[in-house]
Image (cartoon, rainbow, N blue to C red; front, side):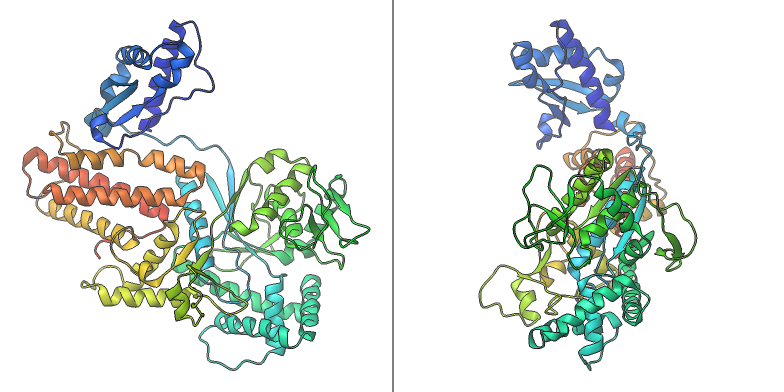
Length: 621
């Protein structure tokens, strides 16, 4: 990477300067560079001289001058850097020799020989998916693409909670809550059944007992209720996979919660945990009979065992039913390959495997790092999984467990009003609720956005309106910072200008059109040996393109899809500014050659970014 080369050269120069003063570069001082907002201050700048002022007891501008002298004696550095300038009060501004940069091949840092398991989506298999679920899947899939682009081996899991209350509620509803409505899909039918059942619980409390019976039956298996639950779950999971595939989202393995329980994974984890002092069965109080994972150094839980932030976490309830966290601990022990047990596997679809009671062996699991994409409300259970790993002595594994937390999707007042929600209280956003049947299903959302795209586009060639709609939705859900609550508004999601998926696709198609016209006139996108004097718009675009590898590495380190979105939107903005300010095909000689080449570099960089984001690269819009 360009930045890596610059930093290495700076570190060598800084170390020599420190040695001349009889000292070493302190570990607390790091050499960092950044691109100044104004190109007048160079292509890159560093404040390392100001950081060293107290260490060397010299004025920053004097230290900067000494570093400048060292850099000017480093020949490989000077081949790539045109000038090093000292600026008050002690900055070093560097200007890139862009002809040299274009002639070099910079590589991403080699990825560790590690396998990453990324778990995402994990929708309850009891009804159709909504846009909140889709945000999870888009974030997870983008992280998969990002880590693979960085060179990691990545395995993608979708955890299916087929033993939870939500599936039990739908089964209760199918058996006890008659519903006669037309539905195109089974998941949509179950959407209405689920909400109807939760309303029925308040009118007929005896139905709640049926839920408990179904929960026990689902966990035990091999009886009518369990088979009904399995049939419902499998049918809905297939619909979920079909929905996600439209967005380019795919999985390697479906891990069923029932497999963890019935194949004895929890039993094995239970025996391991019993040998630790933090896992105890309560004998008195409200938690009597419950097996509890105590927080190290914490106090006993004194409140409701279901409390989200109780000091201790109930793993096994007094009635013997396992909590979600208990099964998740067993699952993570298997993910890391430390459980000494394995599943059997079968094909669920042509490309997706599933855990099974019988089947064949496959090399799943045995991860070096685990990344879980789960919304912020699951922060506490995720912390308990980490603590369980630590208490069992798997400290390294606990350190390599990353929870990618994100804000949920809620509805704008207009979107809520469209669904019949009372918005007279004037709130800024309204939560979706599966129990109340409030939410925007993925299939409905695609249809709505597709309709808007179809009505507003003039050229119907190229990508279909549906493909453009899907790309627009995916980008809309990715471009927000992870912790941001996405307040969904249909009008905002269907905008075709500004920071939108449509704008990115349009920019790619525009660049491809320019290159096709250039090729037709006999101009190939070959790198010029000598660059002409660059216009400001050309320089700005080239400078931004050069940061692509840095963006990839930073986004991978921070697990931040929005960092890729920010880079990509700015990249397209710089290109369209260049396109407007600098006529490409009307230029002559070396300027024409340079601008066609620059357009091709933009197209390749944007294509790479769109691939990481899971967006198409259209030939025309």
